[in-house]
Length: 218
Ligand code: DX5
Ligand code: ZN
Image (cartoon, rainbow, N blue to C red; front, top):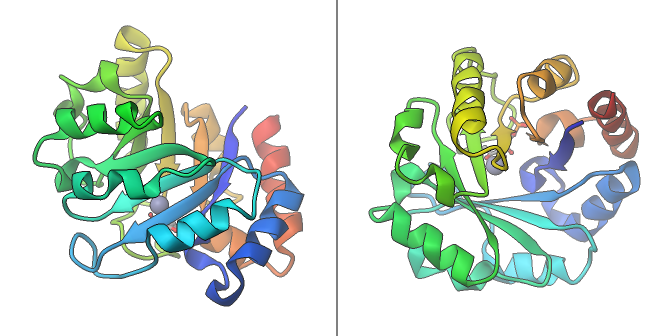
């Protein structure tokens, strides 16, 4: 079984609390929060004040995806009673090992995201310290992009690494997820599927989440 984490990036930003209720009603497992700084990625979304306010409006755990340079300067700002994961990009950290230890010291689970062009080998010496690896299946910055096919091979290799070296590791995937590829992704070992456009672009968002949850439960 795999879990759906709807990404707020494609939600109605004028009613984020309402949008969270809508996906919660469908059985979403996490709320995926995409934080963008306009430097690491060519887009800007929201930051700690918005996340802290929304944390008061939901019982769902939050999965915070930091697409920002030097995330180590701001980590504590993203810790709320609902924050379960803080995920930083390998490409945005000068001292990845230190940053991961800092996240853990805050009492939060730590994840590393890899851009499509970044090799899994960059995690060789840190894999065992991680709770989660986020495989980006699009170049980060925007919702509604097409899934990059080379991701399938990356997932296969990451699964092998997990099996050999860190069975408790969670694999998360983000970008271009839809009802057509969800089951194959689950079968490829993904534990947490992030979906933005495929969830919030649906005519009935709660029903769309239920459709995903049914597929992922099988
Ligand atoms: C992209 C973000 C994703 C995004 C995914 O940079 O990290 O979380 O919302 O959007 P979809 O599911 O529309 O590809
Ligand atoms: Zn994301």
